[in-house]
Image (cartoon, rainbow, N blue to C red; front, side, top):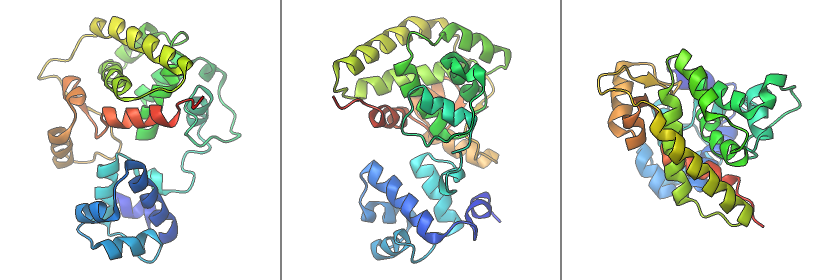
Length: 257
């Protein structure tokens, strides 16, 4: 049985899964016809499943995870609502994440600690992209040097370079409405431009760094790597995430005036 089916079998209702897929599709501004083609379904059948009147096959669900860069936990009700790390991300600026009353360790009062923890051991792709708004809101409080040192001790320093590379591209694609947001975006972009050249890039034969938790086989690694973004290739990171997902997280947290 596939990992996707183990996580989303009888424990989660078809209505919940269908609603979550509709949420993903509408956030990407895809039509039902467009997603149905990707899943090799008819549009009427996809419409039924989104209304809870049917289920996806394991293969179709895995394809959805790949298309929308989400983990299996996205289809579990409030999967990380009790996560101290998710609460810390929400507290530091990632307001689109679901938070709870679960206490947050004192060390997560420092945004630098939160950034380092997420990069070292990401709980989900959404936590990684949530680092965008966190850095935007805390550009003066996050010590990129401290984060780099901690990750270097773990052999994961390239993850910081990959993150900053993605954010640099994402910042250029997001239209910020308020003067405060525009100011913070300029300051973050400047910080990235000053710090990024200091990070050593991995050589072309350096080991790949598997960031996506769902990667389980060499075949999957090869498929993801072949379709990965320039930023992921540059830093030898195996992930489906690209600047567009970081831009979506930034847009979800924009001030509207």
